Length: 305
Image 1: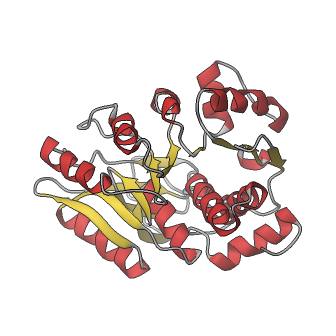
Image 2: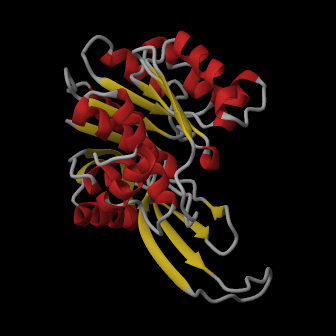
């Protein structure tokens, strides 16, 4: 079974405003309300590819109820733990001004509720897949990822970690199956600027030497690089297309990679599935569909799946 964890999910209120003016009343030209969070994005893309997963984490209040309702309507299995106080956050994303967002804080998560999640995760075993994605809320210990991986050590669970800087470095001794930094995050770790695929390769290998089995490095318009567990290195330029919405592209890449790996246990295929899924989401208003991913895969890999 596949599980994704989103500690602090959101309702993403995505709006576009023509000729936005600061300090004045603006009216939307379009608006959309979607469940948000890196793990949730992974679950949605997996579902679009025909793969079932259970979304875990915490929800609260009327916004939490709406997150669950929307996910269930999309066919994602609900494993969220309900909090009695507070409400799940609403994140405002202004499409008209690229990259402009206002993200909420989210509810406090008690020790009792954290333990409920750990009890659920302790049921995972051989053959299960677990995605740990994004930052850890302020109300949770900053070693939460390490604690989860320590508890699951030796059980045959493939764990994917999509996190940044110290949060990522501290899980490497637990040998995650896949990590997915982008080139900027990789550069921040080692104090360098990395612009080309050739430049990221030695630093990806260094993360592998520290414990990661597979290192998938996303590079937006430059493409991607995979330092694979079998010793091979795969790289490719970005597929051709028009950037429409970069939100969730990285999550789509990790989902596509694991979907491809589970399909054929072949790293080349997994790499191109990841590249195709990430790019297809970037070329789409919403997270990519199977048809969109397949179309980009044919372009990037030079053939059908």
